[in-house]
Length: 346
Image (cartoon, rainbow, N blue to C red; front, side, top):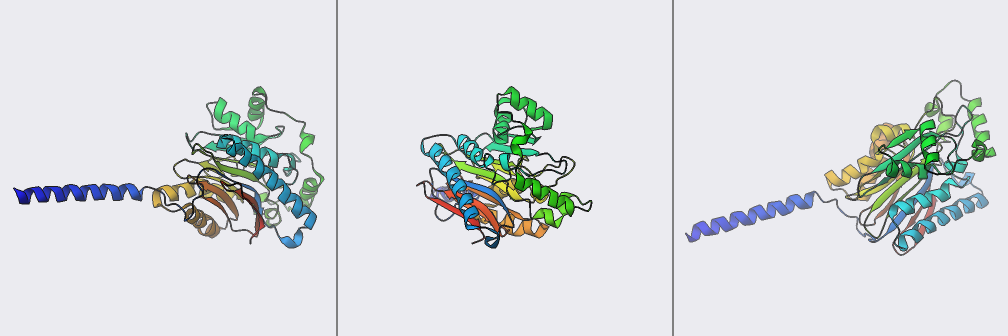
């Protein structure tokens, strides 16, 4: 009897140990120094951003706007606001600046119009909303949030999206609001060398795709959110839509893992499902956020021929900005409110 009892107890111990091991394997690995509590990361696009092409005055202007946006988001989080509010309000500042390819500073499509895309997602419920190809909404990120919260859909496009946003009381502007001389001249130069090529395979246009904006945040309740907004690609044709309004490509958030916003050559980000892939690697392969981001951006995306980057934050507050281009406008804010701003690959 004693021998049988010992065998039974040993069997129970083994089963308990196996159950614990299985549970641990399903938990995404944390990075070395999680910041916990709250955090926020923003980007203003990735691409051929070189210090030699930047005047000190323009660099200072970019940094000041990134800092202003980062402070706004942190203030909301510090005061107990939601990650969704922090993402939306932070992106408003970037959309309202002519410096970035979103909102006011949106690039021109081949037809001479500014066609804007945006998306937003919350990690608690996996609810998401997006708009694509809108031409008269001052802040497309807010339209994306309205789609998420006040409709049964995820993605609305063009006239339908504009009508829905107007009915929701969002600010509608004259299309002249989006005109900037710099962006218009870029379109003219692009058309000069177009030679009937589609925008995404024109090497000159590739250098003009950076500028998309995005934000990811973790609030005091442990909820993650991500948002992305863009004017797309200079000289884009046929109402082309990139990755920014595509959930899983340009934007993704899941409280189990992380929140991600992408920027770069959108066609590749769509094909690689970049934002979701980072989350999936954390959930199913037990990688840390830093490991997953590096694997997707520096290996998977690069091997496909895609360039760009992502910003991300995980459920423990670890902050990441990963890119394979010469530069990415970016800013990070940790739980203490310390802001780190970067532009070049340094």
